[in-house]
Length: 521
Image (cartoon, rainbow, N blue to C red):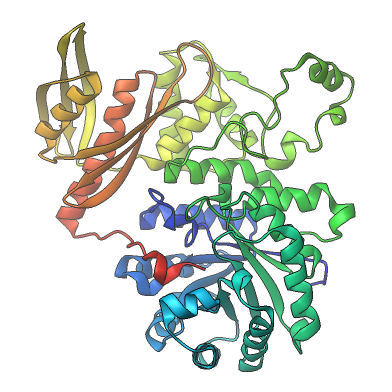
């Protein structure tokens, strides 16, 4: 790898998943890992295998798929964690063990209760053990940005001597600022022997809104790996946004004089996939992938755009996989036109997924006159997320009256073609429908959050509903789409109910979530 090549280390599946409400099933993690491989990230940090059996299984499943990027797992500096990472990632052609220990005074005193020498000894022992198992070992001194510079240099020197091939400098709590972070990296470059023999990495959090700026400051100062997440998801305010860092480097190539290997036209579809799976909707004004990123409403901007796009656009929408076209298909559009438009939007579906999506498109075309790109994206995400039985929604009937409880009746079809009809009353149509579903399936839920977003424009736009619910002390998330928002909510709720019933029948366990003190870097 050349000196001006920046490695992109994606931690969406590890640090990103730690954000509240962002936990993913193994199937969802596999879909994201496939998308990241198509995006051509260099490293996928697939999880924290010691956190739970579910997390171990998901990391191993991703490694087994072996799509191309280095598959990495996170470990604390103890033998048990390191062995679990190795067992989880070893099937991948290229794999990495990532070990970490906190180094700042506040962590030494209040969390670890360890002396400086003990921390170095722990790090060195862990790195040496990991190197006996794999050739590629990354080390992170947690809370590096709040660690004394002289001590940080001592820790990094010891890590390199022990055999670390990548040393990552985390701004764990999003505390630093660009000029200060620049000085930190330059200090390490000047005071650590053999630092040019390893890859210097950066991992920033966004608590003060500077994760991308701090990461780019580190690149200017010599970092050659950026740790980031799709849409910037992650603990608290999130991580460095992959799409923002990558497009900053690409758009300002003459300034940074570095490059990445990212297929940038895959950024938008990957962003949409992660947003759909996690239920973390992308703000309209989000840089690069937000709906307003290439929209121009001010008259003076529109005039400039008509004269030449570069007057108010520093990137082309096509560069990130976003088409300028909007109104695309109608009820008379055929399979060929549908397939072509899906490809234009940057999505890749296998034949089964394509057939299912096309069927949903035809159903939607009977309900609304015009189909927009947003509608197609919602169909694709819905088709991808559609969970198999045991129950399918056949019919929904809702009655509402002012100052009276709403009534809802649902008709469900089971896998063995059994039909069940149940009705219920509720404070509103959604509450009534959810209660009817509970009676029909026997699964009781506690609704914690109900989010509704419009997939496109117009009065007949599809509604995208994301629900967060609890069942027997565990949290679940479901998603549904329909031109009828109550039906969309029912589909989201039923998706969760089906998942719960399948787990009870087959004993499936989902990935566990590591506690912050276990996995924060």
